Image (cartoon, rainbow, N blue to C red; front, side, top):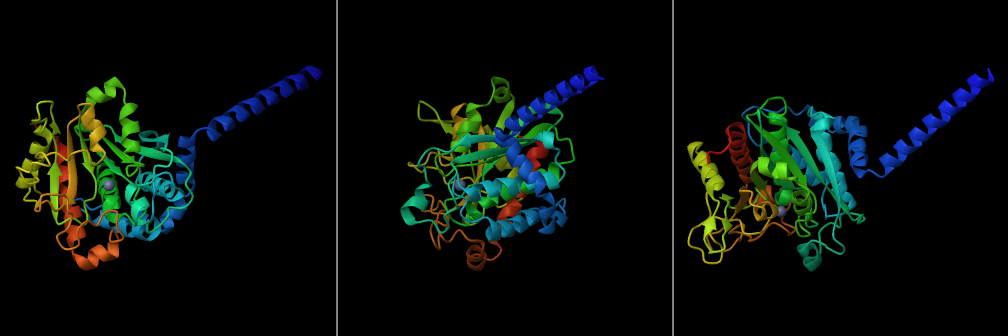
Length: 364
Ligand SMILES: [Zn+2]
């Protein structure tokens, strides 16, 4: 009897210890924290009505636009490292979980945002929204769809903003990715697809730099190319960029953007390459203006989707109002009123192109 009690006590102590260790593990693991938070609010998410929206096989951009309306209302001011940015990360996870992605296909990578690194524009011109308390950490969210091959296409978009509504920069890219992920969720594509929602781009590409630094050699070797979707809503013309400037000053590694452009033309999409012979901006690169740059630095080819206006020789975004991103004009109501139908048609064109690339890859 006594022996039995002692045994039970021992057992109880062991269980207690294990629970305690597990709890400490959980508390110290932000990854689980964010996923846990996303999971626990799934019923809340259903109540938004967003989970009833069904993906339409060919109605490109429709779901993306509906999500964008929700972001406009609920997640303005997503400054890197702020509470609002974190809320947006939870929203992205909820959309993915609700859309049927198993938890094991999701990964959250947590990193510290750089000290005092506020988005340039937010600091200079005063952000429209402050984003809430700065908590100093941010997250990359990755979702993987296993394909027939381990060779991987990575599609990325940042979800932080410069203290604005950030529907153009870069709610639009996030929603193109989410719509695409839900469309591809149940199939088995020829290549493995990895969608990455980067945190903290506006503070100097913190998120994508962290992500590339942590890639293993094998992961790098498996990466065929990267598609960066950043600000595809307000600009006058949808563009594709790619290629890097080599040591001899010549642009190299442009096969991915050339192949993507050929597909766009075949589909009859009004997507262009930037103007040639611009001495300040080597054709057809996207310079170092967004998250493709850290990938290009380690030799991974990229295609960069961005709507802009290059006819005057610099990235003016719109002929009518100049730059929309990083200003108070980055607001869905303003963009819709000023350019009726633009948001829908641009989202549709890029979504269709992305789908075609993910289904068939790019010919090298
Ligand atoms: Zn951006």
